[in-house]
Amino acid sequence: MELYKFLPKTNCKKCGKPTCMAFALDLLQGKVKIDDCPPLLEPKYKKQYDTLKELLGAEEGQKKELKIDVDDDLCDGCGICVTVCPVNARYCPPTLSGKAPDYPPEKHQLFQVKGGKCELLNLEYCRRLEAQGRERECRVCETYCPRKAIKIDYV
Amino acid sequence: MKRIPCTGCSLLCDDIIVRSDGLFIDEVIGACLKGKERFDQLSSSNRILSPMIKKNGVLEKCSWEDALEKTSEIIKSSSKPLLYGFSNVSCEAQLKGIELAKVVDGFIDSNSSICQGKVLNIAKNTGITLTTITEIINKADLIVLWGANAAESIPRLLNKILFSRGKFRMTGREIRTLIIIDPVKVASFNVMGVRDIALQIQPNKDLELIRVLKEECCVADSISSEGVAGLDRDDLKRLILNLSEAENGVIFIGQGVLRPQSESNLVGELLELVQMINTKQEKGRISLIMMGGHFNMAGFDHVALSTCGKNGGLQFDKHQLIDTDDNIVSKIDNEDFGCSIIVGTDPISHLPLSLSQKLATKPIIVVDNKKSATTSIADIVLPSAITGIEVPGTAYRLDQVPIELKTILNPPSNIPSDEELLTKIIDKINKS
Image 1 (tube, rainbow over the protein chains, first blue to last red):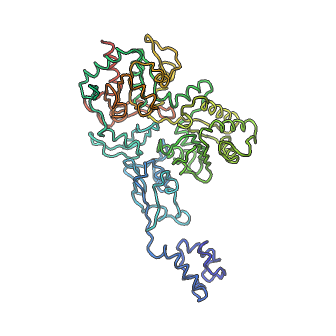
Image 2 (cartoon, one colour):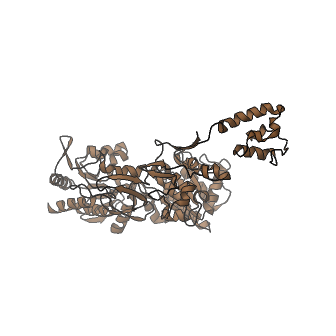
Image 3 (tube, rainbow over the protein chains, first blue to last red):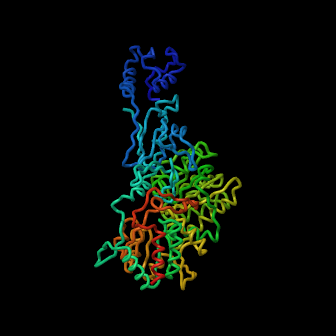
């Protein structure tokens, strides 16, 4: 919505999208660039163009690198992140007490509880990098951590 | 890779992977911080490795012979010994404990009598619907935490009951509704989703809430518009709707409900409420699970019930069980004991100051594997091996399911298991 405010809102379809709203959504997901909107390049939209550049700059300027931080001081190894992570769930074998991670860990596995603390094994298969569409916005590990020990960040 | 049960808390997670080289434990995978601490006790500086006797106010190391001699001396010289604890030992050791109480004409009680034993006592009259963790994982669609801080007391409980994907509930968290009734905004509130209901009740108002819910069960729309106990009317309506429409609901009752209450019969009223809901609803049922803390707290109730027909508070006289309503608190409060034998627990730090002061006036014999507040004031300290790591046994999970414990390492050469140690004491007393 924030981005949509600064678009021309004329629904001119010059960018190839049906509406300006659709363009704004794609802009948010990084599928299109600001320069793909021809009217924005006109002088009368100069101010809005600059604001948009500034808004997206933070995300577009550097190369996005996903980082999941697990705070060792807060974590108590409850293993909710291990169970709730959709990638883990896909590959973990079912046991009597729900799905439990295997050992040695499966190559897709993201989280593992070791020595009473959660540790991140690899990020390659995280949904935020692998999946398409809305699944890319996955934040379940961060949302459901009762200790608020997991932080998803871009650096 | 072998998975072994963890004895960190009453959940007894049976999916822990432990790698060991035969002398030490290298890695513990899957266990929470509580379980890891339990495995760490093996080589911790807190571990007691030789028997100790108090001389001139200081605990000094001594031989097993001297320690057992002194133990039987103290027990023989004092009438009415008090045996307490038994929640961190295997069922086999609990059986020996009851035998010891029979031999010395003592009173035996476990931590359960000030915790979940109350529920079982009241359930004798009203009846109780229980369920198991596996059942919850596979079928449950409603979880109620009533005065129970699951996220901080039993870390992996929420993981299992709320997030696990079971056989018939493939989606895990999404299908389950969580309701938390607690006066404090505890860590469990952090896992709340959109459909869940957080009820921050005013302290000590649980009874009002239960009575209103009971009334609503009989007559619909009987909740007054201002609500009750600081809770909203709409929230209460959603609560009763969830409870009466759940196919497999579970209420976890924790220390908030089990805590000592002088006048009100909170647990009894809660059991009645559950029964009322179960008779009213057609689709499914609501069950209860008591959240004990120690790993074999439920075990003592079962052992005592199967051997003596009574759960907790067993008084022996002339080697016969006699009827009594006493429990550990009333016994200590009336100073109705000559000496105390504490097995695998730490009453000095658990019980209120007034009671621990009275407990400390009489001789104390402690059987434990680690130093605690109780061992520091004890007259005799007898070390034992760690159950579930060094010695096998049976323990009851918090849902009353027996779990077989396994061994990973051998205990130190001079340290017997709880069961062997209690047998030695019984032999010593019988001989002398």
